[in-house]
Image 1 (cartoon, rainbow, N blue to C red):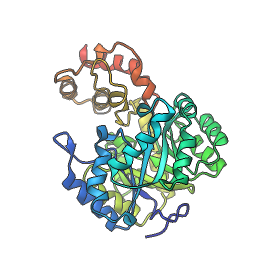
Image 2: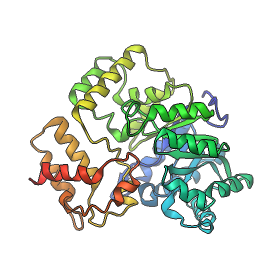
Image 3: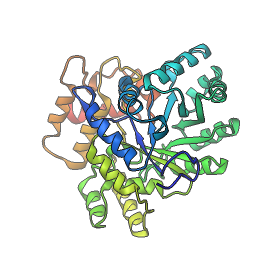
Length: 377
């Protein structure tokens, strides 16, 4: 396995994102995750990424039981994150960090990131001296490398990296749809990382599955290439840029694992013809005016919607309606609102808690109006 050009301990340029692990009856499917983790490590790769809020806390403990307990520590690297809902003052940070080590079953993290930095929560991290504490933990050997994950405009990242040159690596959302998107600014954010000499970790390379399950017209464009899967083109697009240290993929089953490994094990950048094809796919996405939600579920898991509105599932139903115009999309919406405590889109009280935590900066309140008009009449 080729060593990473930025960090010698990283094998290759493909990492296992643990936000979308295989599930069974509401719990992580340990049997399937063990199979996937074993295959990942056996292929020569070693980078796993988690955060405390992923899968309601199950991601960290699944890593403990399926990776840390079953593999020697030298066989895997682990990234975790300091996330804003889990601390309110400086004194909260160390106890939380220690609880993460225990949950993951490790004595140190190879990478530790200040999570989802933007112009708003960055001030909380500064006020609580989170950056300074992380560097202290690094000096103590409990963190090997220090970085941030980021969800905001390029000018904000430029400010953070200017104020904190000690940052070693930056995790950003980067995919071919968001590359020139004005709300995400993937290209501009990437260029800021280049300006400051920071290697990049890619999250959401397939945009929460949106670049896998494509509308028919877009799907046909990629099929005519007679090459890999839709996911493989998205992963290879992200990895084709020179400052990319790592492309993460959240995989939910062995089939996805095998497909991604086939694309990244012997990585080749996109050819000119392939790059032209993904540009045409982007044009189709823009023409459909879809809600580009990644399904991260921060809006329901972290904001705790007071009306129990299952926002990502509603946007998925709306996108299916807009892209495919199937007669039965209304049935899927009814499934979303079925169950105790699950509110309709029209039940939104416009409190805005969801929008404050949305990494995509979506106008969720206005979009829920569209969902209600589409499915509720």
